[in-house]
Length: 321
Image 1 (tube, rainbow, N blue to C red):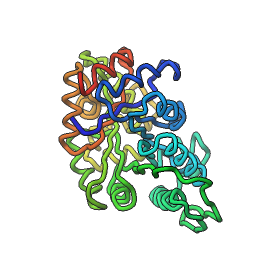
Image 2: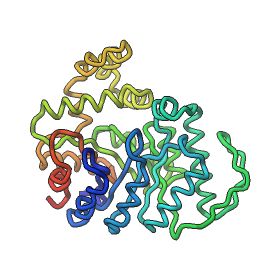
Image 3: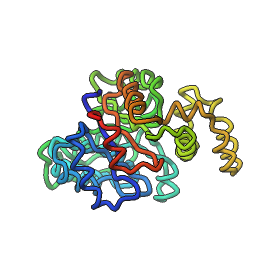
């Protein structure tokens, strides 16, 4: 398997503090990484702060913190604090997120996404290096900010990237990229653009897993997840770039017409099977290995709700299983 092997946390349906035994078990099962997310559930950093104590062997990552929903200084302070809580073990994933999260849920204009990520990267590098920052960036201005402390080790910073521009930015100015919702055969295309920005960059991928041999259940859950993501403009554009316009067209047309049921029904099995890992545990682990063989350096499993207890899924999908 990969040198790194991660899973997404917190797990749905379990109170946060009750998840401690699962997190404590991860290193012995072969997991190296624990990654959070941030959309409309728990924030991306608080669960990681708890996990930094529960399992100090794990590397902790957030995929992602949107660059729009925290001010630059607040984002820098949050990242530095996590880096102090888990020295050498924290990965800050930043990105644009989506117009839904930024505009509809956080009442913030979704303007100049590429420039906003680029400017945030440059500000983070300066501020977490201890510099006093006074700078007019293209998308924001900073006047006299200096971090009140310097973390023992700066965090690794990865950029959420789907298409060439952001992938190349991640290669030039960050430590690598985080990608999402892709098939194993897409990895070489994505990795090639990241590599243009620099050699030996980390490429993390969130891989959605439905650990059940019941294909119909897996596909039904997968369709809900696909419809929720691939109708968002940034993900639609990503998959059009990857050549899936025709496969998605029925879903996109029905979604635009407001017919959610028809949109789900229009998603072909081929699309679900490409983007969602499903089957028994052995099959799922083998499919994750396909991503690794194609160039993913950090697979991050995200378990979909198919009626399997989180603790069982963690054990069944583990590298040592």
